[in-house]
Length: 157
Image 1 (cartoon, rainbow, N blue to C red):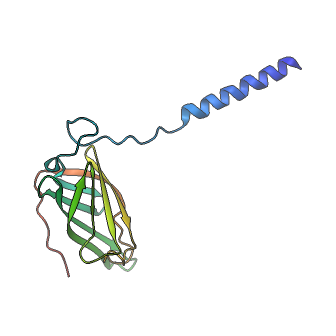
Image 2 (image 1 turned 30 degrees about the vertical axis):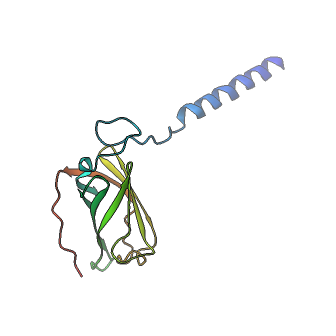
Image 3 (image 1 turned 45 degrees about the vertical axis):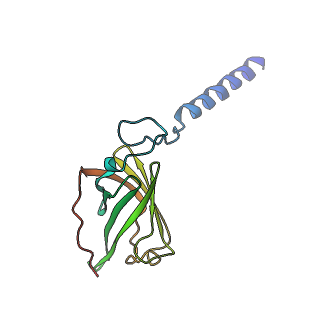
């Protein structure tokens, strides 16, 4: 009985060790560019085009803490008609986080968190709150596909 108890304890210990070993590591935010952790992002390092599927952000530095940001997305209905989401605005940069309100949409706030060649985006507000077409959302992780000065596309009215 003592042997069975020790075997059961050993099995429980092994299972708990495997659970800990298989647990995902927390996401570590790596700032963009060659700089010290905790120092502010240099806005020029963020210039470029970032994509997530059909969604796209175009970002251009407008000074040390300002960015010109353009969001473009198209969500296709099942009948093949697109719902569009577009916004061009100025974002305020603090550390590696930029925030902006698209156009004249006070109920909407979009936050961009810059990581190494990526940007994590969260949208507060619905598609309608942000002035986007139905089912168009900016939230997601975008990968930089092109660096340098982006060309901004005309906004469709």
